[in-house]
Amino acid sequence: MQQNRLLSSTNIIIAITIIIYIIQINLPNGSLWLGLNIYFFINKLYYQLVSTMFAHGGIEHIAMNMIVLWQFGNMIEYAIGKKRFLIIYFIGGILTSLGTLAYMYSFSQWSNVVGASGAISVLLGYYALKVPQERKAMIIWVVLISFAPLLLGVPVAWYSHLIGFVIGWIMGYFI
Image (tube, rainbow, N blue to C red; front, top):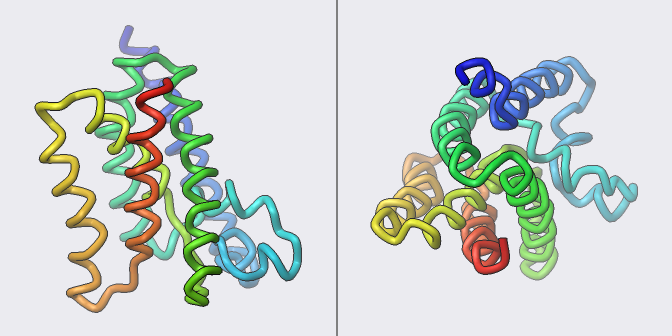
């Protein structure tokens, strides 16, 4: 049983994310190539819908996201199974990327969005719907990770977090 938990989908995603981050920081303009930005449209970089979930803005950013993913991802995966977990994480993450692009396009607020936090927020939204006694804590958590960094002057794609949370909530009705 312990070996299965080490080989959980969550832990494999964490390992892949770390490997892709190492590649990202060693590529010229790696953040722009792997992040989600206006080049999605200009250069038709459609892979950015997925690659943005693996790219990160620095060691602190990836560390924080991977700790949260490890904590919640493993718990949720263990409760719902690998297949449903992977569907929620990746389909929800791609939908969050599309929602983020729509937000940036609609408000002409282009930036380079990187990080797993949109997909992680999908998991938190799903969890909040499925576990009502934890709902308030999940909502507070998403609000904190979305807006507290802004108060400290740290740029964060707060809209991506909120979009992901709502997508996860909606996916919870169907998955």
